[in-house]
Picture 1 (tube, rainbow, N blue to C red):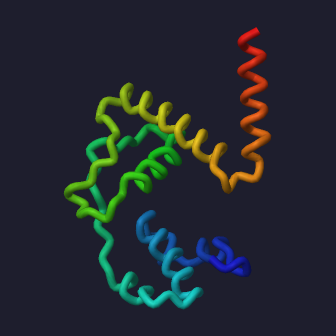
Picture 2 (cartoon, rainbow, N blue to C red; picture 1 turned 180 degrees about the horizontal axis):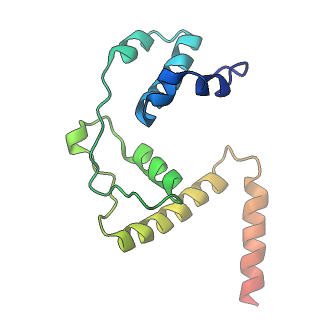
Length: 135
């Protein structure tokens, strides 16, 4: 969205509020694409949303939604939805373990990425803490 736009106005639109999340995401995405004049905006607007039935879907885990999103983005290779597999187990306990491992992986990658302007400080503090623990 452009910095002069706000989500507040969308809450007043009854048609927007009746839509479920995939349609809302598409709407916001299209607003951006039209704003920047993207040549594929009309093509994407004409496409149909296909909701996936994901075998590892959960309805009670509200904490790990960011981990699920990042894993889906990491694993998506443009393949057809029927072949979609993001590597989460169906078992809730195993899924929680997988989320914990992925949280550590993503945190490490973000903290040590070259684009992170605080990378050197983070690594120094981690090294200092490691040395302190070894004493």
